[in-house]
Length: 299
Length: 299
Image (tube, rainbow over all chains, first blue to last red; front, side):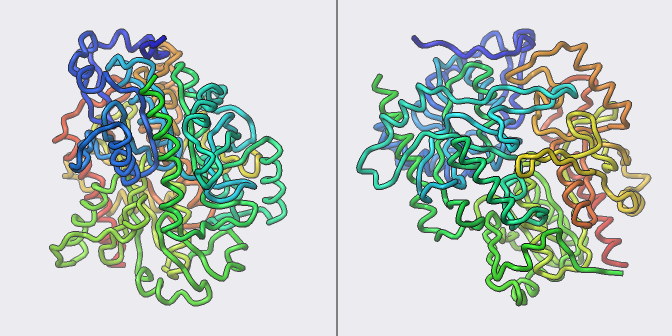
């Protein structure tokens, strides 16, 4: 049964107008959002990824899958906001979120308000990213189940009004299974797995790399940490999953994190695949998510 | 006395080559970095700000100030990396860092390695940003002294190998004073002050806003929190200062955070200035930092 998006903020009901600042989308009258509904009300999936270039490519990739005949240049609907690129292809939004939780969190709050004002019915949020792998072949696609923070805890820590607030950070299992079932094929030529993900705010020290500007631990200590990750069922490391899981879980919006590994961290820290391999790898979450969205629209 | 940049990572000395992945800059031989030195060795200041558009504008703004006659379109040296824009204008780099610490941290680690490999002499790192103000007139420029995290502590917390590491997060006082002395003028028509800054990973709940997708506190609790901030000498709130202060302090590189306030949070949460006012305000840190760099080059 479809349902609208109910956010967890009673203050919003008292606001006569709203301004989604970083998207530069104005909601002049929260009591009558018909203009927003007309533009965004049909959205069934919001896809988000790091770079605007990749999100533009995703928009183009999804057109034939969604049966949309259009060869024009995709329009960035939020170009005037200067921060995030937003492409709309049929009932799917493709949004760039930058690198890491801080930047993704800002646009995620505003996208959640957007789908609420637009009265979208049960939209699904899917992050499509790249990541480091732990003990899996580079090129493997990982669908995140439980998101662990840098303290190896399956939770998201956030300071609110000066106090430490800890929230759960898991993605709905049913959605993971559906994406695997309808998105992955046995003859894909690569593995797609459901596993846990560690998410950090620092790419270097936070992920146990030894090639950053600062490093105060040994190779042995680093390897021991990566082995600890493995014991928690963590197969990949990126910079968004805990915040993404916890915020969507909090407001009851279905979400998934689908990332391709570019490196096996048990073998080193530096990304050394060629640009061509990287581009091939980056297409893999596109095909998984593309097939899943196709399934979603048929049902 | 000028000095090269010594990072705090003994592993770097053992690496025969390095790849600054997100900048897409290759260092094929760390023992002979003459190519990098030739391209970047003259850098005296690295300016960083949120958007690529603003950093392109800064590059153009700095040309006449640096006595550079050039009307051509600035070239983004790291466009192929797809993540961060890097413009070089004379001995100054202008780099976009995105929104918040997670994304800034990634490029900061790589920029610190870049100035090390390029053998730059005592370069200064300056963030030029926009922010929310606390109890100051919108349009005020704040030079950060002590950076406070969302727990209202003057420190930066980072998980490293699963453990909580806490580092100091202050900017050098001498540099704050120099930027104020040589950058600000009595007839600027706006105030430039040295004050403390709170920095959070979340723009909404983290900064006590009541207009995000989630909010579980009252207006009174929010106001009490903002008053607490004031008691700590905090005059502005943004999303980068603690990480930026702590990482540069750790490696002994001089750094400053110069931000213009777009709003007084004691009066509300929504940014409501016009686009024209915003553009005018954004020019203010440009002029402060421009004059300071002019002074730097004369001495």
